[in-house]
Length: 282
Image (cartoon, rainbow, N blue to C red; front, side, top):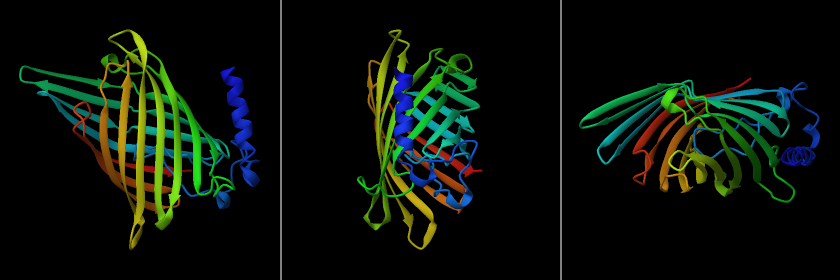
């Protein structure tokens, strides 16, 4: 039943794509008709815009570093090359493979120190289905874009980095073009997360809002600021409130650099993190 509904969703959304709906994985969109490059990084809020049919987009952090001090227990996490590989299947549909090849986490208190490292447990397969706004203003919804992104996470982590359970969820990103060339992004996400304490699944509700704008006098540069909230239900956690900010630099039509960081507003969130990354498409 779920599979048949997804097929109907793909067919219905593809009918809205217009003159580019004939392009697919084996009949790629000509470069002259490719849309402006959009990425799901560096902010947490995902873009509703999909990768053009038949093209591949790579989005990765060169390094992510996070630090947290929770009642005297200090943790440092280093993630090397967290990567999202996106492949355009149809004009409004792409498939994504999200993985982190190496993670090192150090935990330290007055009388103990421990380190775990290896392949990350955060390996996902995601499907982005853009419902409107991929290729310009919609006749009803105007300068907005919206997508549906179901995903599944596999327990591929090394040793203590894996919880040995399949997880998943759905992401609903909305993009809005505001006056003054501001861009607004909103996202609601429901994650089905395994609770090791109870041996049952709970839900994390992720909600974000981000606003971005090009830097005056340097149109290739853009800045953003974002709020991220994570509300847990029977997952063993407490509410996390996070602020993120960063800068993007458009190097060419097919290459973007970015850097920035986050600050935790709640005790349960990491105190801060920093990242530097890049995105490019073929």
